[in-house]
Image 1 (cartoon, helix red, strand yellow):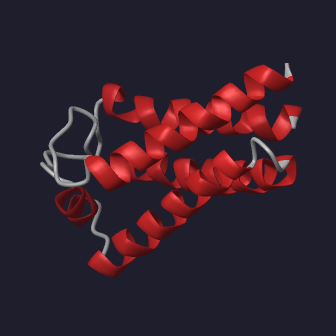
Image 2 (spheres, rainbow, N blue to C red):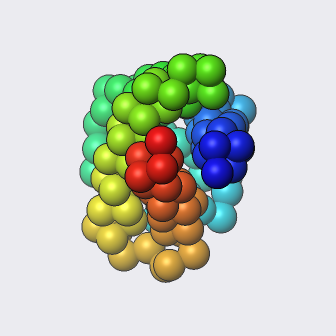
Length: 121
């Protein structure tokens, strides 16, 4: 089980780093509303640019802590809690703009995987 939890940590971390560092300015089918990039997505939710920056810092930070959590499990536990809270907020934003269920999938998946880490770490 310990190995599976570490694999989940790496999957979550790499997914978040991919979205926030490599794909922030690219269109994906999961962006809220009809946004073509991260800035437009947050604008669709009615959120200011500074909030997008704050969320990005938190997600990238938690992703790095999750990777470090492979060697230091306490870091994984607390970062997984942070990611779970952020993903709950992301789901709320998708509900706010009446997105189709497919757009909920990444946030829902990361929420569930984060909770698995919290429960089994």
